[in-house]
Image 1 (cartoon, each protein chain N blue to C red):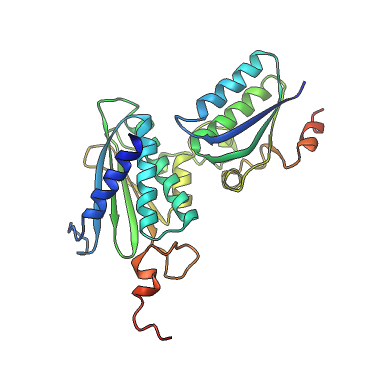
Image 2: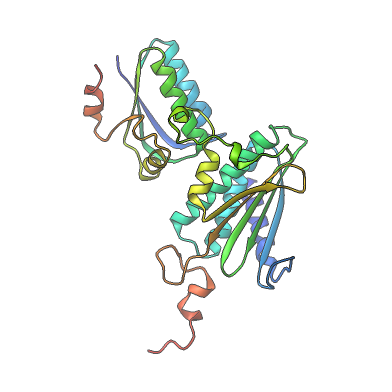
Length: 103
Length: 187
């Protein structure tokens, strides 16, 4: 099963970071290792949020799963580009394409 | 309550004109606040500096960058400098001249040197879950440095040049960029 998580608001210290961490942890504990994070409504992310995305990515990968990103806003895309993470994550702009990308 | 607090501090800033400090011109405005080592201080500092930046004429994108840099500076002080110890304080100050906005963030920790900060873009650090704050501050501000603070901790100093009149980076709030402030506008 592929899980799509629709996120909105901010992923930042004291705001969305802890919720994102818990969401991914709960998914992994439930045996879900094929995850798409839809960031289309995320309008802000700080270094804490970036760290949480990376943490989720490595946690899923350590269970032989895949975590992919969908619909980056300009600010989030710019941040991932300058931190060189844009090439680390699999990023999609089309939901169907993202879903079909799972092996 | 949070909103009120920010507004009050901005009012203080607006009220200080010609505050003269060592090395400053008479036109330099100075704002200094002491923040608790609390996660809410991160938002407070960010919001406060964004409001000052907006009032200084910075456009939306530059305000975002300044806010992000301040946020990262205060996160650094909160987490790495003061190690989240509530008895320690975070000292934030803003100096605004006609040319630039200079922001100081000082903690009460043990201090650090920039050369000791790992490069987050290095291949071996790309998947690190932390260590990108200094990089973002450098990327988003025109000038950046870390020195030993008078508290014994680290003092981050970062500056952003004020937008030139008429440039896309301005929002028109800077008095120097308003057309009604321009001398001898001929019809």
